[in-house]
Image (cartoon, rainbow, N blue to C red; front, side):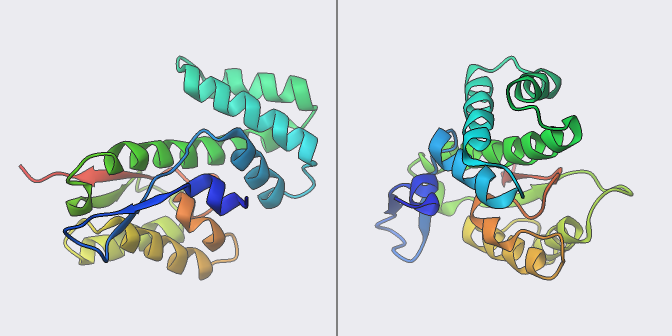
Length: 187
């Protein structure tokens, strides 16, 4: 079973809207996370990727964690440079949080009606990738269906050298991103 199969598992479709597909993500699959780390971070051997994934999945599942605590444990077990560890765990934990959110949203009966925003800071560190995604969503009325959000992530990530368009399905447009998808709710 490949990385995408393990990340997405089965897909369900709504009978009301057969064209709308909402994936069921397995946000804390250690093997899938290990494979993603091994594939997307240079010079990380499978054994180190597995250790990082095990620590990250365990800590995020347990809750009551800090990035510093996770980084210290990963550094101790792998011997990797702290800056590199923070890049990996920051990016992967953000992707996992977005996947967990999607898993929660998509478990609801009316989930095919949901639209999403791309939320995050707008400051000097905001990348052109995330700014472009947010700008395109705003031009669509401020929220878009999940599949369109993935397409926007892929589109903008593919236009930049540091983008990760191959990880749009995980809502990871580039390493060390600071944005999150959130469900838009009208009041």
